[in-house]
Amino acid sequence: MELVHATPFVIELKNASKIYRSFPGRSVTAVEEFSLQIAEGEVLGIAGPNGAGKSTLLSLLLGYLRPTGGSVLINGMAPRSFVEKNGIGYLSELMTINANWKARDALTRFATLAAVPRADVPGRVNAVMEELGITEHQDKKIKALSKGNLQRLGVAQALLRDEQALILDEPTHGLDPVWTQRFRSIIEGLRKPNRTIIIASHNLDELQRLADRVAIIDRGRLQRLVQTGYDQATDAGGTYRISVVGGAPHVKEMFPTALDTGEGEFELSFSSIIELNAAIAKLIGGGVLVSGVVPARSVLEQQFREAVGETS
Amino acid sequence: MRENLTRYAYWQFRDFIRERGIALLLVGGLLGFMLIAPMRAMMGGNIDAVNARRVLLLALPEIGPISAFIVFNGLISTDRKMGYYRFLFSKPVAIPAYYAQHFTVYFVGFMTVFAILFGVFAITVRPISPVGALAYWALVYLSLGGIAFFISSLFRYDWPILAAVFLSSVLANAVWAGRGGWRMVVRDMLPPLHKLSPAMTDLINFETVDLTSVAWLLGYSAFFFLAGLVVLWRRPIG
Image (cartoon, rainbow over all chains, first blue to last red; front, side, top):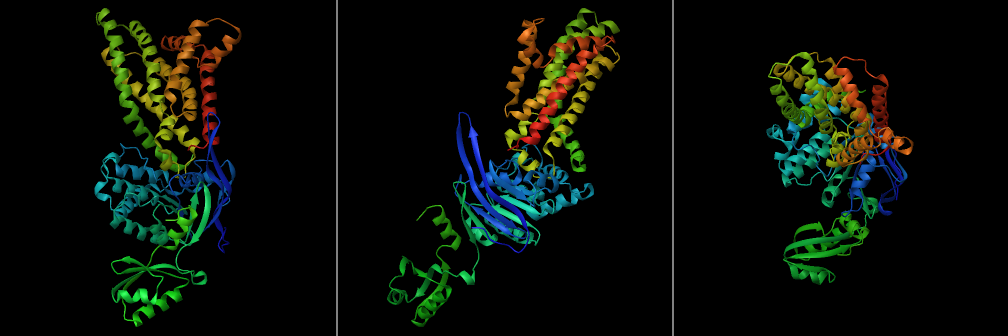
């Protein structure tokens, strides 16, 4: 399950476990025997159903929790020591910022704590507010911000300093489609050879686009580690949705296994991209007017469904 | 201490003023008025320095512990309970150092509020030397702060526990005063509230202060303050 990287490891979890114990003798295993190495320059996605252990895992990486078994190391240091020395750009899923603080004051406070030099604080705060489009809300109290603006403020505070590690928990939660798209561009811009970015999200499409690898976790265990993007070497094909605007009856004639999903759309499974292309060529040659070809399910979605035990 | 944290003291002081200072001024001012106004009326409004000190001796034991309780409530636990720690401590900050500074800044705030209240007392009753009263006020914070800091580092809902501990101390010292054996051990383990009043009387009357009592008060508090720092250092905040 572990991949070997050429670049030095930044974050390493070795059989990390976290068991919550409560009175009287009850215990809940949130993370179990979790092993993963995350390299410099990598964007790692973490996906899992609710209660899978994602947030506990992130708390272990920030040193807010200590593993009850195994180890978690960041650059060879215990997470808390690493954070105290270097800081981590962190966006919590729960936007727990004092509701009475003003947006600008909150960012100024976080910039101060993040050790942004005193003279640079106003400029840095202005820059992140501008980047996240919250300048017009700078004098509003946190409690007066909309969910989307609050989320953008959370992203802004994580970007105040040029951190080596970024951990973003549900970063696009509450963002509208425009800002979701904008966020993706921001993350793309944050990619650096010496920076590690971890994104936990329910949004598989987002992880598919942003992450190099996605760790699928369920019941506290690492179920699968999925390489995103098209990999020619391991091309395994998949199911594709083919839209046609003319000659639809011919599709079933040429491919009896095609599933007609209605309104000129068919689902077809292929063992490789080459086979898919050959099929499209055959359809076009047979007089079918093809208007679109998209994966019926992304590789990640398929892997996710398999990993968490869903068949639908 | 790292420079980023010392710079953050400004924000901690601002938080103190907004979240505690104004409440302290109101409670302290109101309590002071309720206690002092009848005495002032009884004395015909003409209060000499001796009587002014008597008035203070009567008012301060009422205002001091309540004020301390207002300041200490949620000292550390609020950040854990509300989840504020998530954003604060992803920054390069040592948690024990953050809260040690928090405790110190709140001490400065506590003294500032008292200086204002004492100024009002000097204007409305009679100007007297503030040294003894300020020393007592500092002693209230420093002697009760340690146990409050420790309890807040351990429990999310610290105020009922802190109230129970303070109440137990008052009861133990009232019921078991002068008793030996295990009762004495229990009494000594509780906050030494009973040593505060004699120290206050000595300080305000410029008499020789029982240094053993003061050392016990401060030593007890220092022990628990350090214990609180150890908890913050060893125990994860999440």
